[in-house]
Length: 311
Ligand code: UT7
Image 1: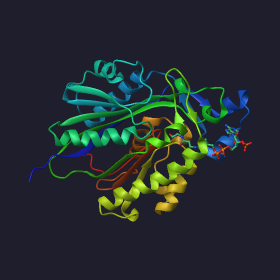
Image 2: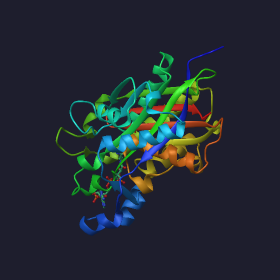
Image 3: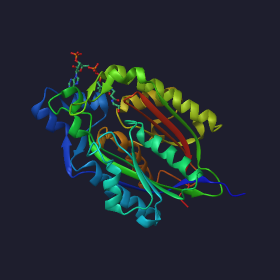
């Protein structure tokens, strides 16, 4: 029987050249490498580029890795919280740089946006699209007050992308869970033209709770247990958040993709950056069950279980 399932067939990444280390913050703010490392797990992050330029670089790499041409793409979805312009959508600039066909739009679900976009891509494949380029790109350094130690040390810039293609044999997106609790807007937000404002401790507590609940939801829908998961690809905000969620889910840290020590929190880019890193290090085998889990301002959350199958 032919079905309109989806699978991930390629991935790409882009990070700006400027490396900002904890020592750089230590030199000009009342903070220390020890505090940042112990409280967050972050050692360095990258600053620079535009959301569109990073997105286009990651998107082109993803096409190459999938063995596709830009004209093969029928839809481009760009997950971002930091669009380059108010209008048009940043995906228009990315479309023009890469040369994709079909529609393009931005999606904003904060740091949960990439998994939202991947799930929407799977839905669009069901509706007839054969190849969708999904990119997560953010330049959070632009909306972070670099003199506020409580946020400055956390965020970085970057992009990651995947290609979602038709799989006529099986839907490799086994299950998904998308959610939002709009009553939590005041604990993490950024006004137009302003800087990110965050009640860190509140976000931390809620993040652990939603990651655990949402992960349990997708495991149950996929009829799997945490033992069946070969790799977790969580949103890279804080190592302690990931450790706390993993512990409650019974998933060991060695089955977890981590890049936040090198990237900081890159919002929409964090999950595809971590996925690409794991793939390049050979941590993903054909048939592996991969648990994606994101959370962010809104408060949004998004999880999915995907069976890894590039071919
Ligand atoms: O993508 C989603 C976005 N955000 C997140 O996921 C962030 C979630 N929250 C967190 O990751 C953590 O809450 C933080 C890393 C932001 C903070 O860690 P914490 O362990 O929750 O610390 P805290 O906010 O309770 O602050 C503890 C102390 C405070 O000092 P007092 O009041 O105890 O004297 C802060 O002023 O640490 C102080 N502090 C710092 N000290 C040195 C806050 N930032 C810094 C800093 N360096 N950079």
